Image (cartoon, rainbow, N blue to C red; front, side, top):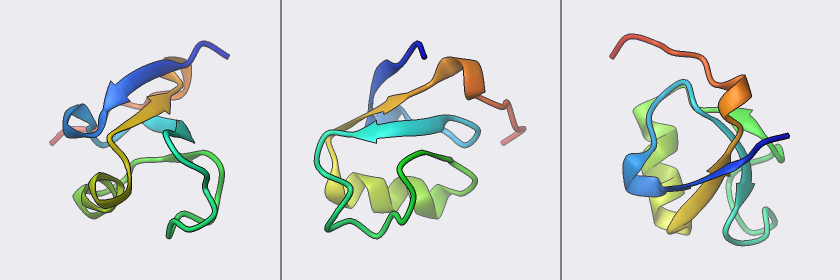
Amino acid sequence: MNKKQVAVGDLRTGMYVVELDRPWIGTPFAFQGFPLTSQEQIESLKAYCKVVFVDPEREHWTPE
């Protein structure tokens, strides 16, 4: 897997989050790895993290 660090302010729908900058326990995210499908998910990540790691190979472009 080729993971890339991304600041939460730069996240967009379609990206696939594979790792947080903190343990998954204590966050509202049930799965260790998920696609971003809404702006609400991004806002939630902003409340818990400064950066996340995404897998560019699993990214799916979606029109804004």
